Image (cartoon, rainbow, N blue to C red; front, side, top):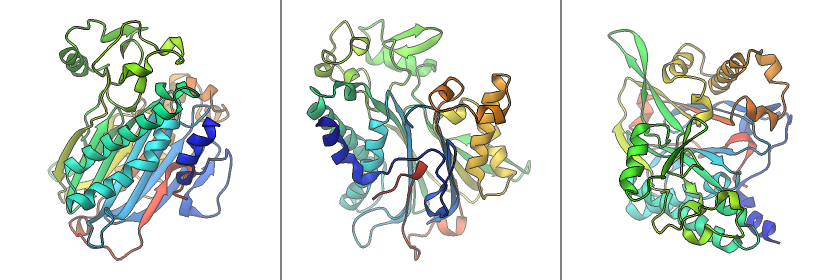
Length: 380
């Protein structure tokens, strides 16, 4: 069966979450109903905290933190990799990316003999190519796989530098201390690719000058071809290759007019910067968090609270805001089950990475490698 084909490819990389499961070990995190959290851990460059809350019937957010060697060679650089994968249309693409993207990072880091923006871009595109091959394999029996995609946000801390890559509308925000004003300022590091931004709509019009319907305002929301809000992703094969824009794909996904040029792209926007002593922490999160918290609000929460459990605190702050918007209490929102919960908020994933300036610039690490995946998913 095709479902078995798909699961055979990805099952070595994940374990399904169980609602309400309680873990006695913090190594793999803990569950509290629809909330999963790992309150604290250490990585090559400092400490971290993770949390995920489910809203959809099937969790569409996947995430991971990998710390240690960033390549497969003995002298590979040491560092920390953070990935936030916000799926849409289903969980399959985000799960696939969680299984494969970091492996490509390691492969190309070894081939390149070091980390670079080119390594990260090549890893994104290789993951995209492999997923497209899977879509082609499953096309006749599971055509829905062509309509599934994932936003992808990646951060790599290596040799004193931070590499940030984003395709979609997840976001990473830096907490930066301001010694003059004695505050910590929020600095957004990632570029977002959501059609709600005029700059993204302009980019799409420049890329598709002969298509006046490349972005459409539908129910007061700007959407690419009236279907999807983001312009970059991994997956979404039906908007990238015409061979998947036809039956047996459901009619609601098919475009009436044929296209030759991909409507969406997988290439991320990438930036690199030296980590400075005033750089305190990084907040990586899917857009479900930023729907309810501003950049500065999130940074203020991290700065003014203990590190232990801080990702969970950010998630709860967002849920409190979501409840407030619907004139209800957080305690009442917690009683609403997944699926129905999506009417109140999206899946939310948060990874907070604290930066220890004494560790950031080092290229050696004596501790054990760290590999953890959000909401109980593990490498084996």
